[in-house]
Length: 203
Image 1 (cartoon, rainbow, N blue to C red):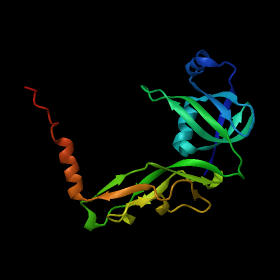
Image 2 (cartoon, one colour):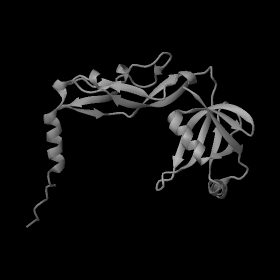
Image 3 (cartoon, helix red, strand yellow):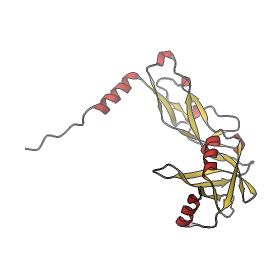
Image 4 (cartoon, rainbow, N blue to C red):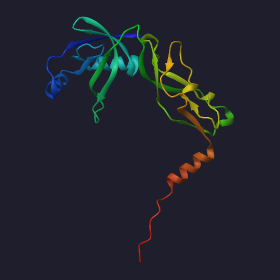
């Protein structure tokens, strides 16, 4: 995965008031964690965070230039405002290029079903899958070709084709997707659309 450049500055203020002040500057408050080092509060430009997510996804690898000192890190988690959906806080994890890391990788379903299965529906059970790899070997996404799905046989985590150096960090029997036949799909839709039964009043 490509390393992205990200400028950051040490954040002196803390607490709710400090976070609000940072956001009023057009920045996002964050914290740098990991490797048994002291956590470092920082701030980054909101636009830079948007760029990082667009280019590298939620597991983006960054060379975090914090007050002029570069640290190799990856996004650990971030929080959005529930109404505006703007990112209001981000955690970065210090990492080593020579040590494997765990990450939840987005699954992207591609391809088309065979014509004989055109009336069937692909039901997604998972949107991400947990893997382990060296940082540079982490994929930004994993594609699942729906043409490989078979009727009456759930496509499992163990069926996913992973890249070199990437290992599954999940139960290989966990269902990822399955094909739903037309009759089952129609029956489920009819049940969902049926009016709820009401009890007769007691006499």
